[in-house]
Length: 452
Image (cartoon, rainbow, N blue to C red; front, side, top):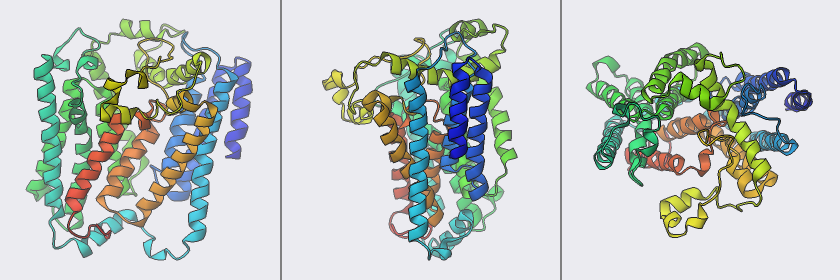
């Protein structure tokens, strides 16, 4: 943490002198240091604190380059808030981990590979119940729900985004209130298919000869087709990313090169969906307003989807006149209960952004909107403590729930620069549906060594 604090202070001073590139590189280096520290200590590629630091601090470093005309020098309070949020997360995680290590000195029986525990415990306790069959049924159920919701939305709205060429924001209008949650639940299916494959393999089954396995593959393919039909790059990244993180969670020996290989595979798909969304190069360049107009679009687009989020936060710091006192972060409650329709004042807040089209924000946007700098500390500390508890929960065993939920939270940490995940109703819908699936699969007995 001391390395980060020193780098942060120097980066701030460099930015004040308009030395933007050195300022950004220093923060990116600090982010890599924090990630590698946790990775080398735990050998966990998807360690939650490491992912958060790599994404949030590294994203801030990328934003410090100031490659767009939309970007301005940040307020001192903005710099302070980013520091407070990161430090609160890191220190809370560290404190919970330290307390646990002092309290639980007799846990040698739980040492070892979580992936191996996932298999051996299932073998000891799962012989009487066909958990893979239940999981396959649940996977088919989620896929059916997602496709049913998609077809209803397409019928009700009268169009499919993929076939609405020439309409750049077709997906933005492809929402039927309440129904769309089920459509986007398709992102959970590839992760469930990964767990199913692990179940079959741990029981000694031959994956290629298993009809259930190929059924799971087909279900995963059908679920991945929905982001394409919706022309949603975000959903495609979420589905592939959570499946990868689930695989890594079960098989901790996965090497970094496989992660990079998937990323390389996802780039053409991402660019293809950009074309399908009718986002021409001239259209995107007009929005992003890069200082160097010759910057290739494959650099400009990911850069702005990371960098501008921090500038949107700075706009919030500059423009906010009164705190929301919790109403922003409680938006999932207003959405699921329907109170947002009964009392619109609960959700009617201005969005402070650099440009109307660029609405993505950081993980801490709503925390500041509600309580200012104090919200950064409070939210960062709670999230850091919760992530540490989740890491420790996953270490104790290898149940399906642990891997699926851990993979989801890991994905949110890896994209902490992108949006306010935990004040987004879809996040809680995903977690709720995952919990329901795990309850169905594991009900009526023991599963992976855990009491149900």
